[in-house]
Amino acid sequence: MTKIILVRHCQAEGNEKRFFQGRINTEITEKGKRQIEATVNKLKDEPIDVVYSSPLKRAFFTAKSIAESHNIPEDKIILDDDLMEINAGIWDGMYIKDIVRLFPEQSDNWDNHPERFNPEKSEGMESVYQRAGRMLRKLIDNNEGKCVCVVSHGCAIRNMLCNAYGKPIDELKTVPWGTNCAISTIVADDGWVEVVSENDTEHLKDIQ
Image 1 (tube, rainbow, N blue to C red):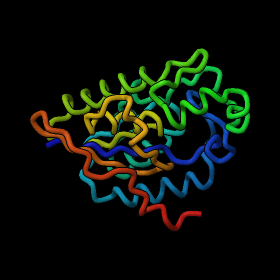
Image 2 (image 1 turned 45 degrees about the vertical axis):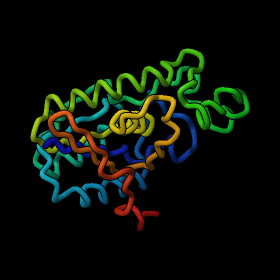
Image 3 (image 1 turned 90 degrees about the vertical axis):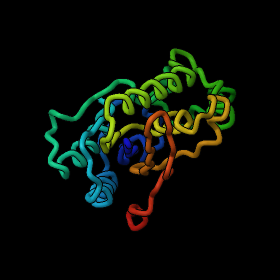
């Protein structure tokens, strides 16, 4: 059986200041560092064999700490572009309040019809759904019998969970968002895939 532990990255500047980060590299906040510490402690007894990460700074910073706590060297962390956050085109770097004001139709799509989300110069949600499914298959096929920790982003993880549930993209809205450093767990064996926990934040309850 393969166990896949999905971790959303820690809080970064965009999360704190409420702007859309997307593919932009942003600094880790002090709260983010505390979230990482709590997440490392939460995962300390998991027999993690390998760590995957999005190449974006906020994910890799989180992944490095998890890897170090399991004696996995930084250069052994596997970076994969399929784990990157959505490329939201002209939204990247914009404050959320400005996005809602300037792009009401796509803002409504983001909240209520994510499968339709496709702002100017973005990759679109369909692309994220497809690469998240591809990434899930890679994780399962390449890590039989292992415990794998995967650090990624809110939208990417949501789409991976949607794939793991066997849901089509038009049911993406039914998959809840995970907060920073939320943990979800997927198990797979001989073609069978199950989400056994979704967006666990118990370890973060005392962090302000």
